[in-house]
Length: 146
Image (cartoon, rainbow, N blue to C red):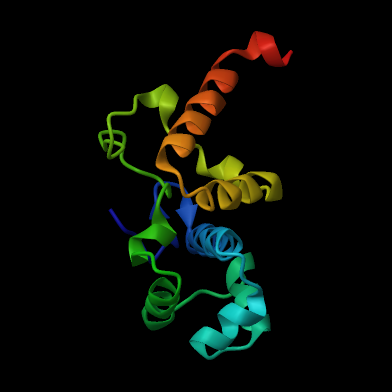
């Protein structure tokens, strides 16, 4: 249940926590698209400093601005809230088990984002599938890496 009077939105999350989460998702999508803060700002009619504030979570976005970002970045508005905190009974969308769920918190580092951008540039579906299979196999076999 939402309790705005006490500043609590989802369990122990504050409004600020949600702004930070949305900002991280904005930064991740911008980086995946290979865009600068300036390019995104120009596309939605704001300054790059405002984009910086959104990405840091120091400024909250209104619904219109969130909609503008989603349209420009070609994602649904819900994208910015994905992995926020789901009820424990929620399912993941595919048939992934708890161990296979994607950890969005670990994606915020630059190396992971660069890997995702490079992967998106691979046009051959067969190669993409084999590469994804290889990465999963390497990740599951920690003895190889240690």
